[in-house]
Length: 127
Image (cartoon, rainbow, N blue to C red; front, side):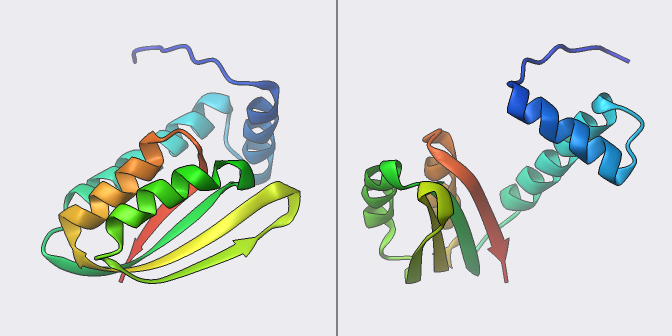
């Protein structure tokens, strides 16, 4: 089996160790592999979307990057049915978008948010 090295900060390492203990993984590598499998499955699911779809987009970000979200979301008003914005603890924001439209357009919206590097959490749930 090939071996790769990764760098993580202390906070992430603590979370990996916590998950390992709580879920009974045999080691840190198993936690990382499980996370990679989940990411791969999520990407494959998103890639297979086609035609008109209805979905919910969950987004968590810091309040100080609100301008990034605003700039991106204004280009996708054609597929946004509803948007809910809520302030969370610790200077975070939760955004919920109800999206309806062409799958490629929705995927483009999600990808722009993901590649911005400013979001804490981006999850597309397809109805």
